[in-house]
Image 1 (cartoon, rainbow, N blue to C red):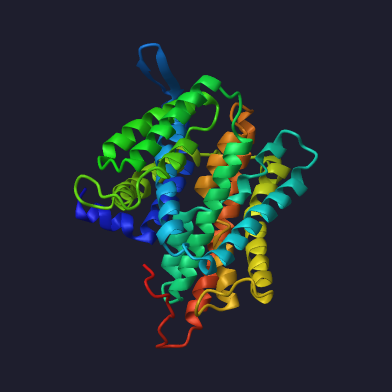
Image 2: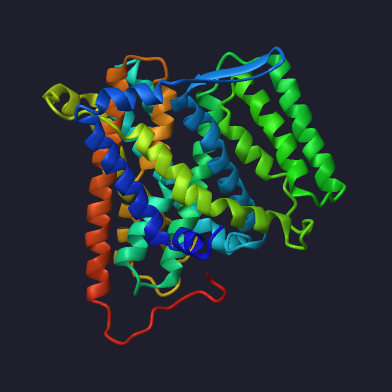
Length: 402
């Protein structure tokens, strides 16, 4: 791993910019004569076989089920670290973002249902506007909110983390089907082995990852979505045990995965899933209940739900505003939480897997509309807050914040 590669990955704004660039590239390709080639590449069949065991999927599903499992492993490692010893490890730090995240899931879903309550098929996408894209949202904040309190960035990160936990629960409960008991037993056995390795303080990271690969394959065959395996595996990686090189195992694994997630996995996912043809698109495709429900849920539901929940929590004495932050700044961050993109596209691919391609096109349009509106409005609002800040005044930050 080169130093320059890691420095780019660690820069919050670069990850967001790369995501946007890959999404734009996908849309450009999808609206040129290259569209047929683009689709044919994503449809290339890829198979892995070991004896009678076989996994055969088109390339697109290897990206969505395989690469995204690594992303969820990274998310799981981050969540575990933050909850056990990070800035979410004390009740006072957890309360406001947790309340905000719950409202930020419920209100967008309610808005979507309001547009689609009488459409049995489209109603399957109720969870699409409930997600926040951490990389994209943090990238916008880093570009336009550099002079704002660091506590605001931590608040945004915390809301997004709880949002991811909610998305994972939703995927497990509502987007898994046709469960295979045999595969579930194998997966649970693998998790039990990971627990034993953790308790025995085994220091070889590759042993955990090898067992994790078996767990992923079993979950893939079980009917539970395979990405959940990544999140589950993360919770059995030791937090304080040092690996064979003397580094804390969980922190070191998170450190090694992060550049690949930021600079490869998420950009590849964006390029593979954001390509939608807009040439000759009909008014029905732009303004149908599915598209509008998603766009309105992200742009309106997220900001209203999160901000209203924060206001009620603070006014009732249940929580306090982020240190040094104003209500206007919190509202700007609430807007940024409407950037669903990666997670929204991912949930959309699960909700309408195997359905008419027109549904997935509407999902992509709705996600792009809601996310772009949220990004532009949030960036404008945040930048205005920076411009009116007192000249020369240093932003207030929380001790130990990184």
